[in-house]
Amino acid sequence: MAQLTGKIALVTGATSGIGRATAQRFVEEGAYVFVTGRRRAELDATVEALGANARGIPGDVSRLDDLDEIVRQIREDGRGLDVLFANAGGGSFATLEETTLEHFDDTFATNVRGTYFTVQKALPVLNPGASVVLTGSTAATSGTPAFGVYAASKAAIRSFARTWAVELAGRSIRVNVIVPGPTDTEGLRGLAPAAEHADALVKQLGAAIPVGRAARPEEIANAVVFLASDASSFVTGSELFADGGEEQQ
Ligand SMILES: NC(=O)c1ccc[n+]([C@@H]2O[C@H](COP(=O)([O-])OP(=O)(O)OC[C@H]3O[C@@H](n4cnc5c(N)ncnc54)[C@H](OP(=O)(O)O)[C@@H]3O)[C@@H](O)[C@H]2O)c1
Image 1 (spheres, rainbow, N blue to C red):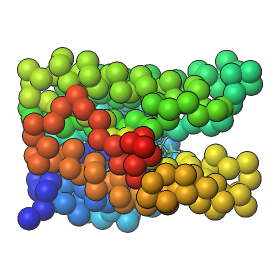
Image 2: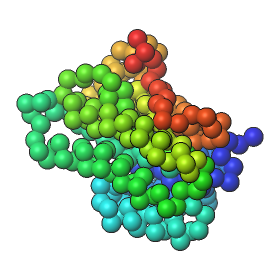
Image 3: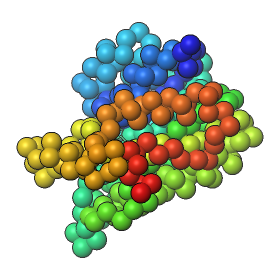
Image 4: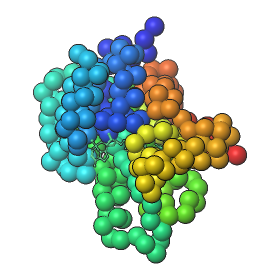
């Protein structure tokens, strides 16, 4: 039996990696999915791969006008949202000494402000009983050199979920965080100093955690399906670590 039959979902950051894999799993589980991202060509390719039960709406989550347009189109569709996967995000390395105002502001504009206003703007279209899933990171609970701004941005995500789970409980809306460990995506590979070092980086990060390898995006997507579905009906305000044991050692 499919786990998301008849549900309407929005996945932000669906043009690659974890978001794209999750949109795919949502469709396989019977959902209709709105997908977003800034890159038009990748968005079109994603929609084409997902098929008839997907629609692309381009947008940058750090721009409130773009979020308004995404929500306007969902409102126009008329079915509301049963699942909101606020996943768009990313980061790059910079030590405390190296961090510029631009690096700090860009990271927070996407990861923190973008997530905050994605959920705020979606409130009017969230159906009763909806599930909101935010993408956190294991970086939020560990000290990784040169990853301080990103780590703090993901700690904010964890905090938002606690507050929103309480604020939205009256509408039977659940809010949880998926916490991926190292996952083989464009985003992770982009942290390598050069493209030829990406394989080594993915291998090295995977080797450092109990399961001994990085996740495939589909493995994170499977955990998001659980949080999105009614199977997690008593789970809210929590975080689900899909981290290969990274933060459990
Ligand atoms: N991979 C990992 O090891 C890992 C571990 C923990 C947490 N995470 C988190 O998982 C999430 C997905 O990352 P990923 O690894 O799948 O990386 P990815 O392949 O780079 O995917 C990131 C997605 O977010 C979108 N995005 C980035 N900035 C955006 C913005 N301002 N507005 C709209 N969309 C934006 C990108 O699309 P466009 O470029 O088309 O806009 C892309 O679809 C992120 O929140 C990341 O922090 C990843």
